[in-house]
Image (cartoon, rainbow, N blue to C red):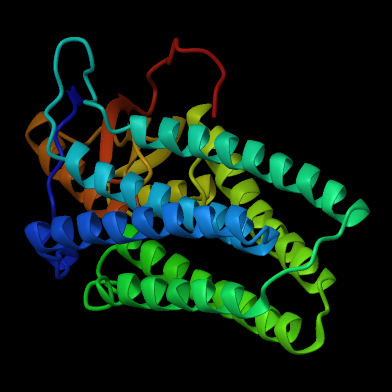
Length: 308
């Protein structure tokens, strides 16, 4: 009486972006952003600009985010095997965690250099900073436009688009600070801009670290509320109650669930398959794509212990 198949209802089918087109978009976005990171980092050291170095770190997070999203698409095609019965989907969560730790290290290095720079200010070439950062605006906007068409059809794509547009705004801030440095020799603006960028990186990185650590510990994914899941299941005719409910993330985009479903004694064996499909249809409404269900009769004693 156990079930582990998953069926999609036609009412839940949405427009899906062309995988080959997205692969090209991700690869091109990764390539041009990675090249710009190298150029901006080199320019930052050459012109002794902390804001350029910080912005290069910020753009490096773009490369990591794009690579992670691309990897998620690739891993979705990898079949499960005897060693990894869910496939390699959860590695996307692990990479998110590693990515956030690396960015925290980068933040620490930039802050250390900021303290040193504050004690020993140096003259800067404002126009050079503005020119280099202006290329950052161009790179981020062009990269974002690669995902514009499909941003409303896939969460990973939308995340990449919004991240790139936000980084274009950060690069604009660096351009403006460079202009003020060039016109008025306000050299501390470079330091201030680098600290603002560090704050932006920390904000997004902390969220990434918290969410990826939470998911790696099999916490209930963000946006899913157990009571809503229970209510959705109990809407199905023939279901009396739900217990032993467990929800976790299989990857950064797919969620799984196991549950014991208490059914009415009148429910026959031949009706279980239809009941199972109805429940899984309802679970799609609460963003659960894979469910393993165990059915129990109303007067049956469950021996799995006292759990949710």
